[in-house]
Length: 327
Image (cartoon, rainbow, N blue to C red; front, side, top):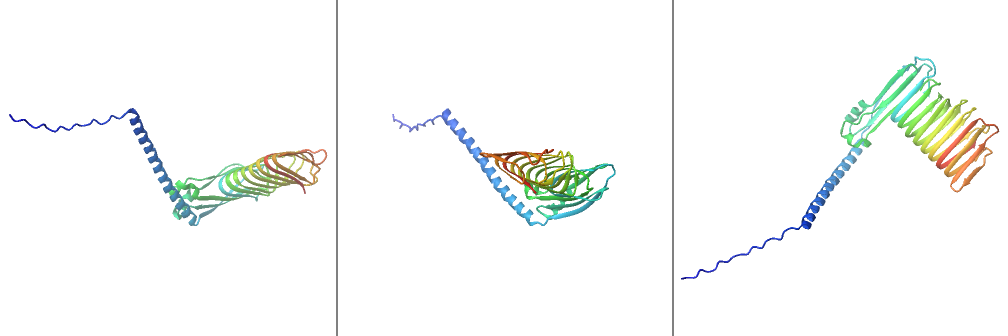
């Protein structure tokens, strides 16, 4: 009997079983890889968007602006001093003394977008609206976002509305301006302005009632006078205030500034009680018999410029300077 040769039998090794720790490391690695992949995609998108934004900004800057001009005349139908209210977005505002029985508005709109066609479309969405009730007139600017690709980069689009408004010399004004330089000349009345970031000039004005000028950041230049029993509230978060004018009797000026310089120029004959404090900065007085007290970074001055004053000036500045000068 023949003996059959033994068959070669391969022994298969059993692969090691993954432990819980191995599975945890693998899952963590996958999660980290996914996160890194997402950040990579976002980074690529940021580069693309940034590049496109630069191209858009360059293209918009290279385009000449598209402009449109219009005029509007509103007759005043009520009795008494008119009240003109303006709500502005961006551009400029000039208010001048004109006719006693009407308000004239000269409007210039300007747009610079990625193309001339897009600028024209944007221009059509910029509106100046008027509402009137007797002698009360409200003028409001409205803007719509760009309808073209520029909506992704609104900062590269330049849109402005410039207004020149003529009103009666005696008029009350109420103005809100997001980023519009404002100039008011030759008006007598109560004036209130609330500005975000712009330059404010009041020239040869006569302030009555409770006037108030407020700016988040910008420069205020005021020259003129105040009628008896008038108040003027000046507020500026970051900027400068310069008042050059005359007080009557029982007038009160209050100044609050977070950071910046405040200067007040008054006739030497002015009788006013002054109470000013600068938390971090200095005070300078010339022409009036007032002594400044300096205590480290804090400066203050309090006293009367002449006997028996009925007017008051109160100044609070967090960081900056205050100058009081007789002229």
